[in-house]
Length: 95
Image (cartoon, rainbow, N blue to C red; front, top):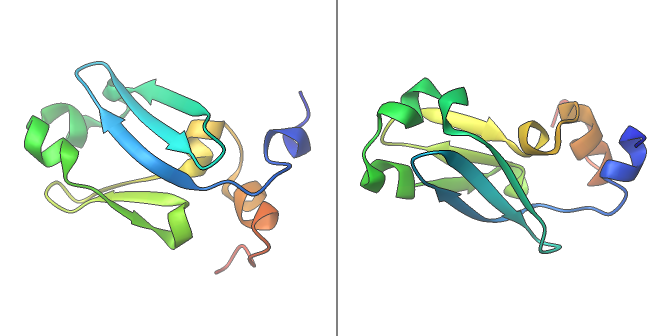
């Protein structure tokens, strides 16, 4: 699959779920994307309450967990370069 087809329609993060195995985002087009919780040592060590306390940032293209100072971008879940996400949204990658 070509990178361009992965983000052909602008999507952002609508919802975040974290359990003992995965970090999952639901995008505004209804798709779910997950990465292993082990990818984040900070979230792996966090309590369920800390994992549930997140903020969407960068116009819905990034997640910040203030209790553990962790950040993950939508590009991580889509498996693309961050610039692809910003280009699809019409932002300069330097935003």
